[in-house]
Image 1 (spheres, one colour):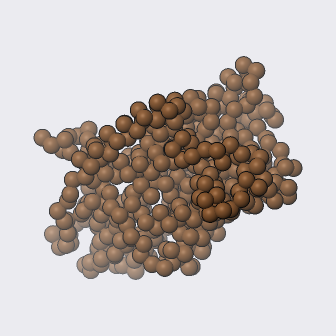
Image 2 (cartoon, rainbow over the protein chains, first blue to last red):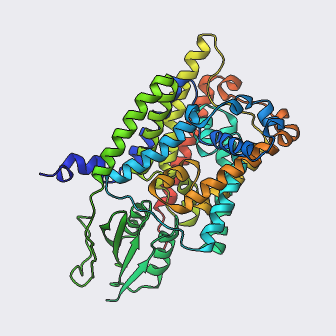
Length: 176
Length: 75
Length: 223
């Protein structure tokens, strides 16, 4: 019997898991990460560092900005492969790739239309900017922030919902 | 019993579901729509919605990362 | 394949399965690379190996369960579905309790409150609003974008690139926002403000209430 025909392979590797399973595992992983490293899960702060490292090579003086002169000063001395947050983000990408390949469900999906290009560019810019001023994204500010019993996490949840509502209207009107 | 094919390849979330909902609204009872997708979210959320509405649903993986969802309108 | 309610006209419907390639060998090869990298990272620092392993773990769980925070916020309005909304509320509630235990132990040991407690003010509202719009129109939030980069969606490769640019732009303007709002906004750790019992009872009650609301909303038939 091929390994792919085995029942356990089918349930664990081939089939999709339930949302409930995902919810429980994500929470357990975040709790474990917090317990082990003292810092909960976050995704977007490393993005600002990647931007800084790229910007520096183009001659942008990021070290003069408040963000990199103060709270994120240490970032300018780091590099991608020794920065924990960057490696964790790379791990998420590779983990998703691994899971898709193991189920033989990996496929490159090309961009289909100009509206997808505009949506990706404007959406990416909005998320990047918004996450900086709100101290995080759906993971760092919402998931980890709310789990930390921080008021800002709750504010994030409410206003991300409002933003999603606005985004839905825009999506249907301009991007479908 | 008309059969329709809905090509949703390359569409971003949640376009396959929205297109399916719109198509189903125009279909008669007994008609079937075959939704072609390559989005891992859609292979879950389209059948889930269709079953919730009470229709007959079947899904088949046709290639790596590609699925066909067969929905028969029952009401 | 559903068991109870199959499409009745099976022979009439044209099915087009192509010859499927087996990607498992590639996956196994990649897994070996992942393990080798974990060992290499652990030689540099324990924290780096932990980051790599947890990243892989998050990526696998997100992809396998098709977990999507964006859909949790978008679907109730756009498609009428709330199954992901409920899943997000569940993951928040479990994490809240787990984090609470960790924080409580730290505080009892005389240390400060660990975790992601940040200034609460209008900058959060504005930023979260921008984030919500961006996540829905681009088809993925922060974790969702990374997951889809790994799944091969070129649209998310593009979105990630501009996500990084937007982050740098936000970092540039951060000083301005700090002067305007952030520096005058307090950090509010709810248990420190209102006591542990009340803070947790309240937060869990709100999450529970939202769960019931989502459950009821999701059961309403759309079309």
